[in-house]
Image (cartoon, rainbow over all chains, first blue to last red; front, side, top):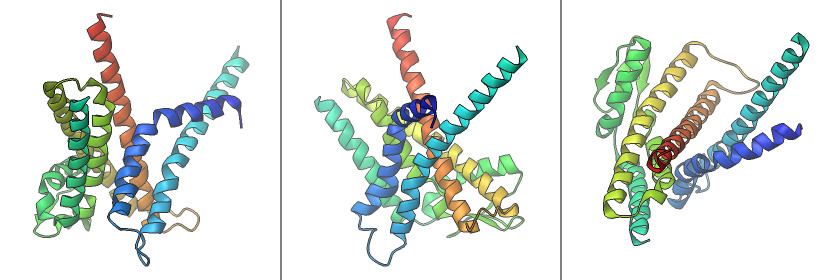
Length: 80
Length: 175
């Protein structure tokens, strides 16, 4: 992975820490505290999706932005 | 320090209370969330929604119901908690504590209605334009859409709050 994209991902995770924490607190921690993870409930499967999708979106957004910037830079160099 | 602790406790209790109310409430009890959301969705899509007691807001034309699970109370709780914690460094007195909590509640409520309406508008579009990705069902796509819109909404709200906080700080410094 490009070093610039990796740094952007680290920065994005740092910026998204508060939204990520509040999202996890409301969608995972509170239901868990209320005993939502009882066996036989669909909560574990739902929790896995909730846990994985936001970090995946952050990485995807950073990579898309990095690739778009790289392409734009390459286009500019070609035109000059 | 004591005021900050009180603020943290009030935020935690409010979030817990919202969740508690949400789990016990029916669609009729959640009109304060469902009604503005249905109005926004109706304005954005041109679809008429009517209140059906015990069910929520129904569109017979689109066969779509804005029901209890669409209320966005989870988002409201997350948004309120996030904005309140983001501005917690501004709590220095009782007045500033009440201001921060009040502003956080208003920001959280406004954001919840808007983000929830966006989520429902996209869900309505997905219902008429089903997307098949790998082995994902329509329910899975709906779930991913919900997570993406809610999390994206929280990120945008956090960024807005950060900018407002920074500009208020710069204005106070006279820069």
